[in-house]
Amino acid sequence: MAASDNFIARRTTLWADLAVLGVALVWGASYPVAKGALVHLPVLLLIFYRFALTAAVMGTVAGRELRSASGRDLRAGVLLGTILCAIFLAETRGVALTTATNTALIISLCTIFTPFFEFGLQRRLPPAGVIAGAAVAVLGVLVLSGGMTTLGAGDLLVLAAAVLRAVMVVSTKRLMGGSRLSSAALTAVQALTVAALTMALILAQSGVGGLRVQADFGGWMAVAFLSLFCTVGAFYVQNAAVRRSSPTRVGFLMGTEPLFGVALAWLLLSEPLTPASLVGAALIVAGTFLGLAFERRR
Image 1 (spheres, rainbow, N blue to C red):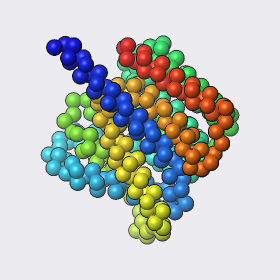
Image 2: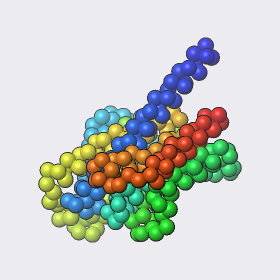
Image 3: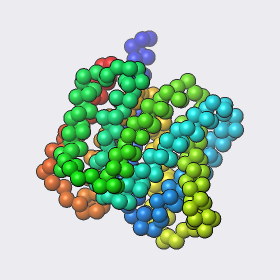
Image 4: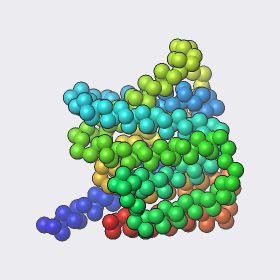
């Protein structure tokens, strides 16, 4: 019986890992798409419509559950939504000021922040193998980026978003531990919180007229892709995976995001793929699997 339970647990973890890798792939694609969408919509409007659509979809899916949810779970969801709003304000403004490639590279530094936040809450350092894996993955990002010796304002905003992503993963695990709120309902609460906060900012800056959009079909398709795939699907999967795994494990798997980001920037934007890019990609993969191996042993 114990062997059977162990097999089921490993199988569940495997599917969670594959799902998180799928999220990393989708988010890697989100940067060139967001870059294009920002031609049609300013930062706040893009975030507002992206999450308003997400809230409408997920609210419909989890409407009955949300009506019966406890106050504690709803407050936790709103807090996580506030963190999520801060992530996207920094990340979307950052991608408007820097390149899609730089965004994908810098955001992956959440890999190194996540284990330190997780173990820091326990007032101890991560295992040496986890630290080594994070260091190798970060070295890969530095090789990919050419050292990141000159960071502009956009790069620094994306770096702030990377820190907040790590906070988000750890906070989700702590706040939602033991919660009966499903991942769909949690995603709905988070999305509604982001939409409400960004709408308040738009109204404060520009009034009701600030919600008006002048975008072509391509602009709205970009919003739909970012909402349905990069938000509805990705955050639902991430919320579910964090509950079935550990923040450190999810953080390492999300660290593969720059691989997809660089590859898609090459395919979609014709950005060069150099030998340094290939070496950096190999280091990221090596660091990710090294960290995962030690995390699994823990």
